[in-house]
Amino acid sequence: MTDRPLPAVVPLAVLACVLACVAYATSAAGLRRRGDAWPWRRDCAFVAGGAALIWGLCGRLPGGPFTAHSARHLLVAMAGPVLLVVARPLTLALRVLPPGPLRRGLLRVAHSPFAAWLLCPPMAAAVDMGGLWVLYRTELLSAAHHRPALSAALELHMLLAGLFFSAAVCQLDPVRRRWSLPLRAATLLVAGTAHAVLAKSVHATGPPGTSFATHDLRLGAQVMYYGGDAVEVVLALVLAVQWYTATGRRRARNADRKRRAGGSHLVPR
Image (cartoon, rainbow, N blue to C red; front, side, top):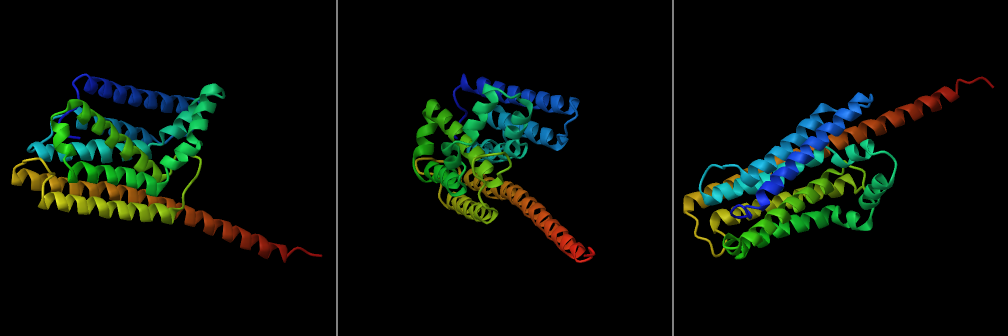
């Protein structure tokens, strides 16, 4: 994620984001018309995620070259993917699609061993954070600056890695295997630490082969550090809500079980 990708790629990416938002909003409206519940906050999250991607891909971002690059990384690789994931697009698609080959195919992909491997939290974190460390601690960023095709490939990688990492941590859509909450929380903690250390290392020493101004480099590293913290707080809140909900359900089941056990002693023989 350096300069903007190939000019031909940007309009296609923007068009894909717009079409995805329109398809999501249309599908959600169709659910509500037939009487099914679908929270409006999910529509807002998906549209906001699409807007974040569009802004990151083709919008004007403040600051110098590296600060703008860091803001673009934050929008395309972190904030946008998280907003898209919390909107539960797979769940919506499965509820809208009628029984048939398309729905079965989508379920087959979601429940495939390959999807389970991609959505394993440690694996998704390794791909996401590992890609960032390679980008900023090698000369890859400098090389991509002079090669638009490589820059576009990096944009795509960061977007997909961010989506898979967010989906692996949140586990909101129906997938093949649901990983435990402690594992996902630990993965988020380790990934957040790795991202913070990377931002601090960039603050101290710029990416190899680059010559950003000191002020621009440090401001961009701060955007990376504090912006990453903000996105990770959102992911932590998702996990906290899941823990609270699971705890409440468990307590309700235990209370109901005790109530039934107590009532059985009152039945006359």
